[in-house]
Amino acid sequence: MGRVPTARASTEQSLLAGWRHGLSVLNLRGNPDDPAFRDGVSQALGLTLPTQACTTVTNDSLRLVWVGPDDWFVIGPKGGAAAVEARLRQPLAGQHFAVTDVSSGYTALHLSGQPVREVLAQGCPLDLHPSVFRPGSAAGSVFFKASVWLWQTDEAPVYEMLVRNSFSGYVWLMLERCTLECGLVTRRFP
Image (cartoon, rainbow, N blue to C red; front, side, top):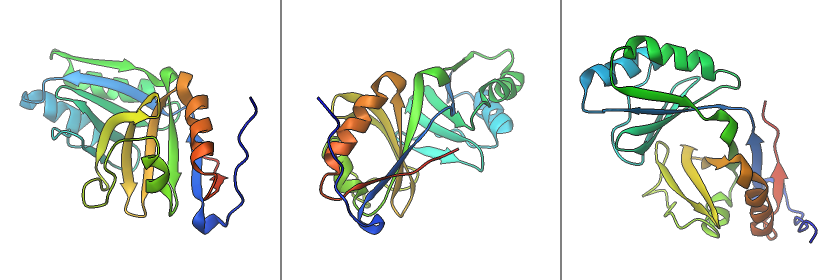
């Protein structure tokens, strides 16, 4: 079965999408009720650990995504996982925590454009209405049959979707099918 053709539409009406391959993705585990753990993470990353469910915080180079009550993704620039891990290990030494580089298992999809909410709604059951899901919101969900993590980075709206590498082809194919009416414009990211 060949690829589904993408409709032709103006950039203003199309979904803009592009893969951000090679991002650093670390899985951080620890006790958010322990002030030493929270302070150590803040000292290492320059970010306050998000302890509220379904939230994310960011600075110029890193993003912390709440995954569970004692579980976070630390997402950073390409090739930076070892440096971020070392920065975390120093202030957290002697504490009960775990940090694991899972970069090779994930890739991120950057999504923006006027139809982005409607396109995502075709395969994702999350309520993405701006009154519910806004910048700083993050949630684990599905996009059709693929498990994903989704967060909103801008009011425009702009989203990022963290996808297991093994599902990236499937997610892209479904995205192409969802954009037959509005069109899909591919963007390149460093």
